[in-house]
Each structure stands twice: as structure tokens, then as C-alpha cells.
Length: 114
Image (tube, rainbow, N blue to C red; front, side):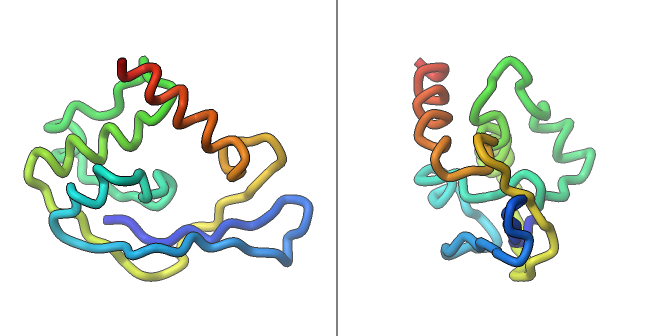
């Protein structure tokens, strides 16, 4: 199960950012192959699913959560989506939550996968 994250800017707490996208429930492997759109802060996974899919691979810096979502989907589990803003995520300058750093993280992820 995952939901929406509402991003709050640390230096302007009255300013919010919400990712736009088409989130789905069910078998979402095809969507996950195109993008890691599930914010790890918004996910609830049962211990059984987590253990069966071997959890996070901690030797990866990025995208360890995307790797897990893919393995969960490949194992045949369906993911539920709740269209509610239930999780606040603070955006700070030069953190992994900023959009400016995303290309660097993706480049590192591609390099690690080779």
C-alpha cells in the first residue's frame, strides 16, 4: 500500500509541492519499469512480503527502494494505492528530496546497475 506525499519546503513552510502522476493499484510492474514514482515514505509493506522479496539491498545507494518495488511486483504481489496526502516530506536545499539532485541520483543508479 502506498499513498501521496505532500512535500513541504523547509525555508517556506506555507509552500507545498505535490507530484503529479497517474498512480494505480494492482499489478503496476509496467509503470514501475518506466519510473520510480512511489515515495518510500508512503509505503506500508507486510513483513511477509518484505521477507519473501528479500527486503532492501543495502549495498545500493540508489535506487534501493525502486529495486524493492520491482521485486515485489515481479513476485506477483499487487500494490494498493490510496489517493490521499497522508505523508509530509520536508524538502531541504541539497537533499535527496530536491528535484535538482534527481538526475545525479539516476546517473549513479544506472552506473551501479552496469
